[in-house]
Image (cartoon, rainbow, N blue to C red; front, side, top):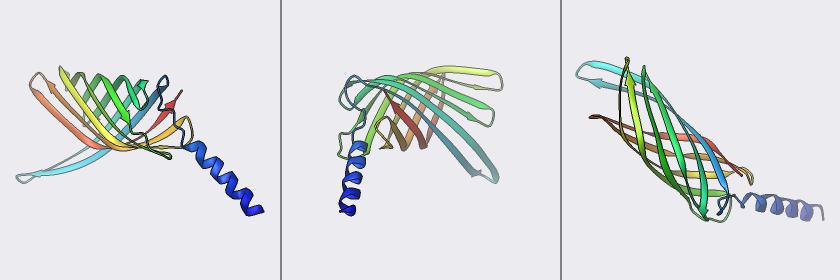
Length: 169
């Protein structure tokens, strides 16, 4: 009898995890961060850099699984700052359970500044990953992000893994 009660409690607990708020009419607020460490060797010269990226976003579900909103990205690496702000769309695939694969895309304005000089222009962003629903209102995001900026002829490409949280309300 005791094992049946434990089994029933487990089923009820895990079934509540499968209902993420990725349905029409809900809001999502996310924040992802990336830490990238890279090194390269170019004709006898070694170089390395550490990059920190923070990407907040807010969206509204216009249909089940489809949110539209605005996202941003701030990248700081060795004295250079790259930023972007763009309208975006994200699609969360309808799966059973608490793991939801997603894709996202955005187009907007960005800029780069280094040593007191700055330039701005078109920014394109894309990402993919999975969201693990910790409970009905909180998800853990794991994925890959790409940001391309063409800032007055200065082209910047950033690609890396990301981890973050999403809050639904």
